Amino acid sequence: MMKSRKITMVWKFIYWPVIWFFVFVPALFWPVSLHGILKISGMFTGVILLAVALLLTSAGGRTLAKWGHKEAHETIWPDNFIDFGIFSCMRHPMHLGLALFPVAVALMSGSVPAICSSGWGVSSALWFVLHIEEKDALSKYGLVYSEYMQRVLPFSFTVNCLKKALMIWQNKKAGASE
Image (cartoon, rainbow, N blue to C red; front, side, top):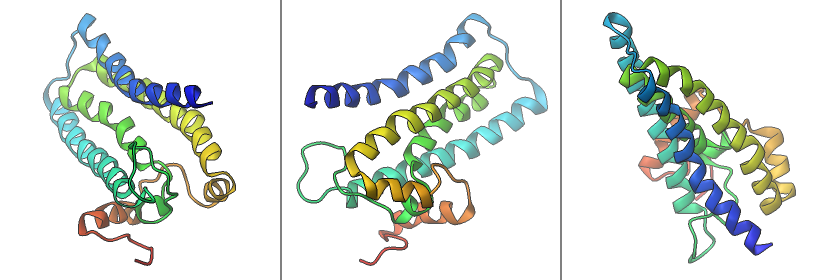
């Protein structure tokens, strides 16, 4: 069981760079770029999307780093269940940010093949979260996580959720008692 868990942890780290790599490989073989207003609007949209991706990833990571461990911890993997702050409105903010990152970079690059393949990258990333991460969280937290799944969406772009992502930078739990 422990060996299987270690393999899963390694797989989680390897998965994201592999997805990002395959988003940009087609651009090496077919160097076609956007031009004019399409390139400018793509760059603008990419910058905004990158800011949102970084906000979601950092808010989730910072929340878990601050409150995701019961005491001194040996790994980065949280051992304390978190359902406040950004996690009160979305189960996987970090993963959503990681999934949006290649789309943002592809839009900023203006590379048509990268933009086209970034959709597949997002799809695979979201599949990974819903089939691998969810299963891992269910086995780790059991009934508590199952109930959490019933009331909180896996991903959310609501204004309220983005506000909660900003709250961590004010050192607040955003919705939980201190």
